[in-house]
Amino acid sequence: MRMDFPAAETLLRGCPTPLALVSPSGEIVATNAAWETRVGGGALDARVHEQDRAALAAALRASLDGDATQTLDVRLTREGETTRLSFWRADERSSWASAEVTRDVEEERKARILLDCFRVMEANIWSCDTKGNILVSDGKGLALLGLVPGQVVGMNVFDLYPPDSAAHTIVKRTLAGESFFYEDVTEKAHWLNVYTPLHDGNGEVIGLQSISVNFGEDLKLAKRAKALGECVDRLPICVWALDKDGTCTLFEGALGRQMGRTAADLVGKNLFELYQERPDLVADMKRALTGEEFVAERPMRGTQLRMRFVPVRGPFGEILGACAATEDATEQLLFEAKLREQLELIEAQKRAIAELGTPIIEVWQDVLAVPVVGTLDAARSEQMLGALLEAVVDRQARFALLDLTGVETVDEATAQHLLRVVDAVRLLGCEGLITGIRPSVAETLVGLGVNLAQTRTLRSFKDALRFCAGLSRAKR
Image 1: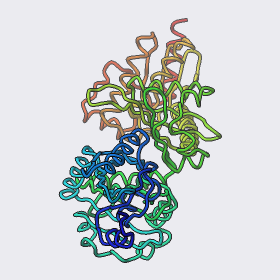
Image 2: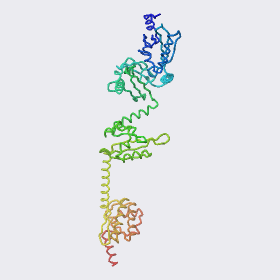
Image 3: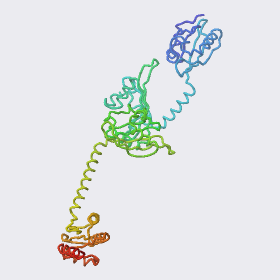
Image 4: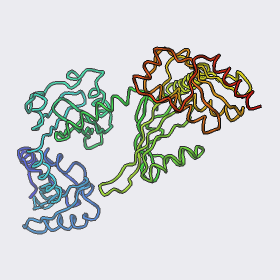
C-alpha cells in the first residue's frame, strides 16, 4: 500500500529530528528542514563519503526487505563530521531515514577543554555579522573593559570604534576575508586578540569571530615594551636581531625607514648573504655570535652608523643569536672630530705659551738664562726642567741662571721646584745660579726654612754675568 504523501509531509514538517523519505536508489523524495541543515539536500549518496556508499546501499535494501530498522555510521562529505543513519520501511517503494550528526570524540574533548578554560581565564569572545552588528559578546575578561556579557550585543562595532582606529581597520579587513593576530596594551590588561572570518557552507564570509586573552601577569613588562616600541618607532635609531644562522628575526625603528629599509625587506632573510659585499658588517655580526659585546662604527649610504652588538643567550648560556641597536652617529662623529681638533689646538697653544713663559736664552758663551715670571707650579716646573736640561746638553753650557726678578711671591712648593732644577743641571756638569731674589721672597724662604746652602745666589742678573765672566777668565 502506497503511503499517503500529504500525511508524509505533515510528519516531516512536524518532526524536529532530521528526517527524509528515501527511494531504493537513494534519491531523496522529501525532507524536513532539520535534515537539510544537518545532512544537506540532493541525493543521499552524494552527501556520504565514497568509501561508505556501498554500506549505505546495503542498509537501504535491507530496510525495504524487512521490518527491522537498519542503522550504520557513515562519514559525511562535510569535513570532520560523521552521522548515524537509521532506515526503516515506509512502503514497498520508499524508506524513512533519520540522521544524528555527532562530532568526533577527540573534537568533543577539545571543545570541553576550551570551554572549561574559558570559564576561568580572563578572555572574551565576540562575533558580528558583515554589517558590523554584534551578535555575541561574552567572557570573564569583559570586566576589565567595564562591560558585562551581552551588554554590547545589538550595537554596531563600526559605531563603537572610530574610522581611524586599529580595531575599525582590522574588523573591516577580517570581514573581507583576512585573519589577524593583534596585540594591545591598556591600563588594566595586555590583550592578544585573534580575528577570523566566519564562513557559511559555501565558503562565503557571513561575519567575524574573535577571541581575546589577557596576559595580565606580563602587564608591566608589556607596558614597558609598548613604550620602548613607540620610542624606537620615533627616534632616529633601529633595533634588529638575527639568529645564529644569520637570519634576520627583528627589524624595527625610524632609522631603518630613513635609510629605505623595512622589516619586510629584511626579516626572514639571511643577512650574511644580503650583505656579502660588506665583509666588515658580516664580520661584526659573526663576532657578536661568538658571544662578544662591542660597539662598531660603519659607513652606510652616506651615513655614519654606530652599532652596539649584544649576544642573545638561552637559559643555559648557549648562543641563540645576536641583537643590535643602531644609531645615526654622523653629526656626533663630526662634532667629536672638531672637538679633537680644538683640543689639539689648545694643547699646541699651551705648549707655545709655556715656552714663551719660561724662555731659555744663551746670554753669553756657555751661559744660559731662564727668566722666571709668575707662579712656578708642578707642570710648569717639569716643562722648564726638561727644556733646560735639553738646552744644557745641546749647547754644552757651564752656567744656568734662574732669574727670579719677575717673581713676587713664593711658597714651599715653588722653592722645592727651583732646587730640583738646580740639582738636575748640576748632574750634567752645569752650575745653577739663582738671581734677583726680592726681599719679600727672601723673607718667605727663610720663614719656610728652605735650605739654599748648596745653591749659589746673586743679587742681580748683572752680578751673575760678572761672576760667570770672572770664572771664565780665571780658567783661561
